[in-house]
Image (cartoon, rainbow, N blue to C red):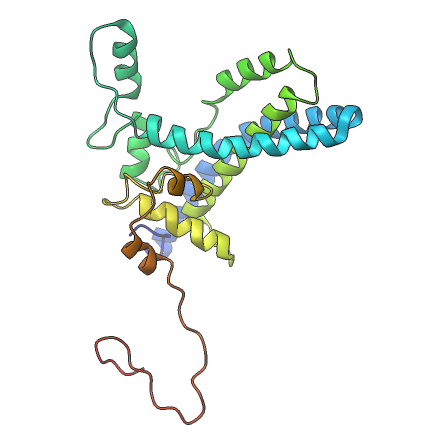
Length: 246
């Protein structure tokens, strides 16, 4: 199973240095959308809160929740989608842009991410979401400022959370039960038998809803927590499965 730099054998100083270089490259790619989307969210929320605090806060939270399903659907059906060539310009364009790449369905960039999970050029989406975001934001202002524009702020902020969580599971380590869960969940997706399951990047809820959870037997092994209880005083050595004394 994929893991951190240490887990994939990059335990030498040179190996750690390579991972650090890729981490910096990936992180720098996140800065532009982080500044852009967080600035938009902050400005819209500041204006909306003065008009209608409760409604604005509700729409923002709903927007973040909406993005969790967007995140799942895009990952499953676009980044891992299959777009065969065929008659008609639409099929031809989709095949050219979103075609299957060497056994990994979806766009070439995502295929490269699966081939080289620690390549900083393919960890994050960078600014590829900006054109669509601009269109949706402009359309949202047809509605009152504390409704659709704030909903879009929640969606874009949810996207930022997803991008930084994805970055973190590949490069960082935190002592957090959530982080350990989502890190194992996502890195399982990078294994040969995991590419058709575990599409959620910040949670596993929609994998449960759409029946793409990690198989139960693998979940038990993946999320098993070590027993750190101290042995009772006077108790004999513990025996692991297979008869090994510890």
